[in-house]
Image (cartoon, one colour):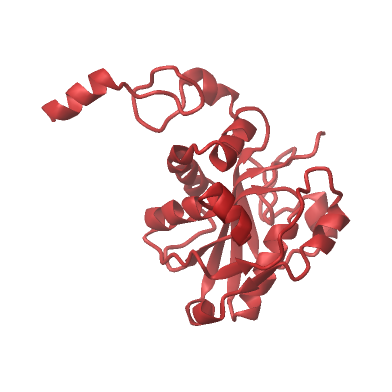
Length: 239
């Protein structure tokens, strides 16, 4: 305990979003906590996007009522804006792998009514060329910690991305779905770990849902019984 106190004195805990000192490791300072848009209240049962108003029972956003969603339920922890967006980009592109620790906790909280320990946790895959360039798959970092928090089995290579996609930030919804057709397949050697099981599919960001849809369909082709999706952040339309 004394050594830990010395270490704390030399290296005090800092906010994961800024340099402000905090009481605990892997947390947000009060200011950043207030600025971070955590998703709560009324949400879409399919994608986890926040909705206006109040309601009881499952409700769905406009997109999920018009776009077929092959998965069963979905949740997200943060709005992809401001601090949430900055943290996702830092995790993905700036080697801030430490951000996966608080992110996984927030995701577990967001999905607490949907996820169960008997689910198999699977990340959305990266194409091998991006994996080499980035050195890690941020979705796999998140899914490993989510699985650990649940005490659930983790199959990080259940899916493979066989088509490298161009960056699609400025691409429309229909183009995203078209581009991802056939881009993700299940790993034949892992199909026995998926067949007949409920799956928790994890990624860092949900935009149109095209990537989650392609991955879900591949899991279903491997015999998955039920698929739920969990993302750290959700791109939300302006209201």
